[in-house]
Image 1: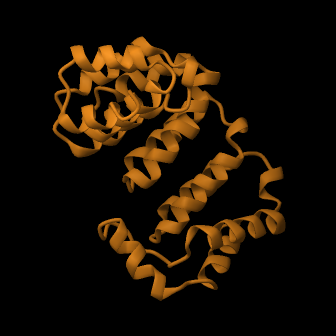
Image 2 (image 1 turned 180 degrees about the vertical axis):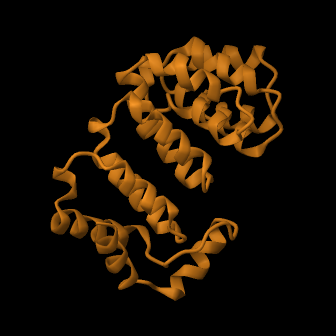
Length: 218
């Protein structure tokens, strides 16, 4: 399976695109230069030709993609995980934690947290106490960002007390990606409960960036 997707991606390498894409992510990762629309079409072709979506979930395939140098392979791994998210179970939480903490940047973490971790936490709520509570106070900023963002799409199902607790636990943090995550989480939740978010922002000391982002809709 890995050889098939590598051959497909390599055949569509575009050096003219690769430079600007690398620059967009602050030179953190190499790129093949395959932009999202084309990448989606290539993945669709790969799924059809390989039949991988009909097979049991393959974590080794995910890890093999994650190990590749170019960023498009990590995006392909996440695309595969999203397609098979209903086949995941709580035993896959360590895999998601590994993906969050390796080759970490907002572009991958912000997919893993709400779309994958969020689904597993809704399906298996015990992973919150067994895993995500620890992430919220981890030394790893990306685990903390994931904890703050995993309820991003929960809307009326948001555990408000949990969200606010995670934010309080991280409100002292001067890291941009944490401040931004706090603001984003509050902004999204304000679409469901603006009064509660307004009251929280007024009562809880927060970074100016978090306040600005969190207050956009209230």
